[in-house]
Amino acid sequence: MLIRFLVYVLQTVDMDFARREELLARLDNQVITRARFFGGSDSVDLLFQFVKGGVGSKLCHKVLLDRVSSCLAELSRERKIVLANLLPSMKDRAKEKTDLAAKLQEAVGASEQIMQSRQKLDHEVCLEALFNFARDGMAVRPFVEYSLERLVHSVYLLTFEQLCRLAWLALNTADNKQLLSKILERLQQVDLQQEALVKLNFKDFSYLIWTLSAAPDKQQVRFVFDAYEDLIQAKSRLTAKAISQVLWAVTLKHRLKKPTHEKLMQSLSAVLEGLYQLTSQQLAGQTPAAQFRSFSEASAKEQTQAGLEELGTWEVMTLIWGVSRFDSPDTSLAVQLLAPVFLGKLDQFTCTELLMVFRVFAEQDYLAHPGHALADTAQIHSSFYDALISQLAALSPGLRIDEISIAMFYLLKSPQLQYRDHSDSLKRLFEVLEEKKKKIEVASPGAAHN
Image (cartoon, rainbow, N blue to C red):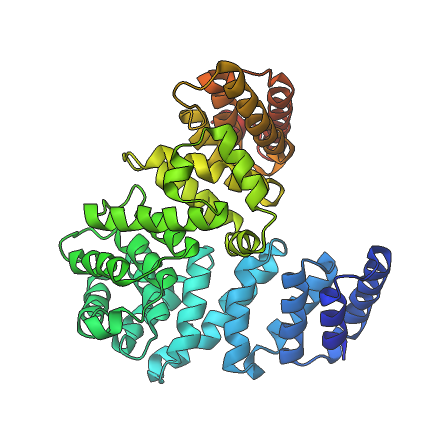
């Protein structure tokens, strides 16, 4: 009953804010009071909803973690998988979640009884726990070693998505050459055969490419990269999401062949044509100011709105960053055309995503236009850069110290940022930087200077 009511409160978007907070506070108190009567499954489900919704007090989270810990033996494999994904995403209760992670790993496969008896491993639960805990630094060494040893024999039982995760584990948690060889054998014999290749999705395959870029023997994994480019060529149409996933996987890691790069840029041109409701030839002939106007006019149309819905902030950031890394005649126009799209979603970006986009436009002036009047250039710069820099300064408390330093460097040194006075934003960044340094000094005297 509590779970259903919590889901109702979290999903009712038009509920009055004060009323929502009141109901959440009551739910919080009810959970704390009644937690000792909950079963393990109910406790996992409640904890999942609280963490997913970003609600619940620290005490509420602690009580539920303690209850899950005491009921771990009764959890189903599905709840164990939920727990393996949930614990690394929790931002607080570090000790409790780390202790519970260790207990879960023991229950899944790290206990002496299981290792000595060589019981059949539940590879799905084991892989979820190992992958999520290893990425968050919570995996215990006996569990890692035992699981990888046993998973060698399960590579033909895994889905392609699971296989991609296992490849990451093989390269990042141990120098497991036997496991990597087994994964590559399965890829060559099953997944990358021509009839199976076209069924793969770019999200999983891109993650595999990103992972295998770190492989010590590049020739050993060469056939995987070739198959990836074959898949790009085989697709009749690439969506903006697929293009962003490809760019994320290959930027600074893998040099695409010329035909593959051309296919990628042609697909991006088709995406931009759909957003602007204009052909590539028409867009290329416009000044940046005219492109901004064209996008503003098109953004009110239903077809453009549908295209923008598909583009999340991560996709826009990755498209801008990824395309800007290519030395190509098409690069400048593509980044230039993505600028209005970025501005239209400005208030949705995270601070880290904003910094990545800021670096692209601070390093090179993509908004200039040959023969364009200086006054018009200054107007475009002020409307674009003022909005970007103000938003970056507003979100700067979420940046790391090194990221703030990078932003300040570009504000001071980038030639295209000299059109306007950004001293207020620079002052704000400096204040946040000093506050962060003081916090480090308080937590660990002298650490900020190391």
